[in-house]
Image (cartoon, rainbow, N blue to C red; front, side, top):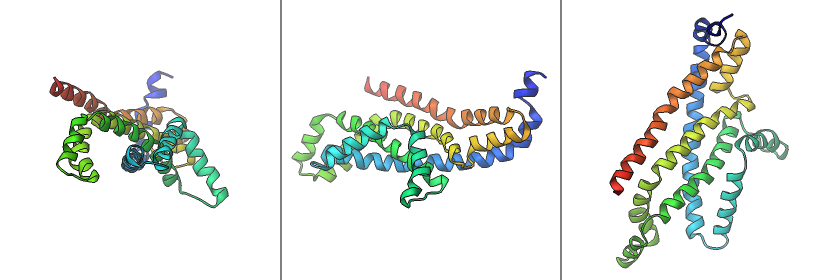
Length: 223
């Protein structure tokens, strides 16, 4: 049997494609939901860390440090398999979303912190001088400038979240990888896994390229 029959079997791929596409939509939904919640959580965390005072700032720092240290897979297993013992039972989708969002929020908070601290201090002083409140300083002056600095690393973090959705297969969620694994078992052929890998590349490659383009554009503007 040739490599094409084993790994690139066209008939097996065509048969498994409907299942792969169903899994793709679930993967995209899981990834986008986790990215949005992670960004919202990261923004809240960075505000608490920089301006929350005691005790909120140390708590935010502790959260960021802990969840940047915990592997997503371990957190996912704890959420899905351990929380039911204390009366909290989540569906596979929301267990995966929770795990991905909690970790993404920690990384997003650090990225946003770097962006906010990268804004020149003179901008803060000027905002205070014209009498803007702390909220107006942040929304009108600081965040619009910080966003330009953090778009590339936030895009990279979003790509990582989308790739980590593959871990949801361990809690029996029918995402792209789970569908590919089941199709492989039914066909006794690894072609569906190769097909899933190709779909991941097609999905994520534009975002990977966009990071490089954004960084080049920002570097040209900086010069």
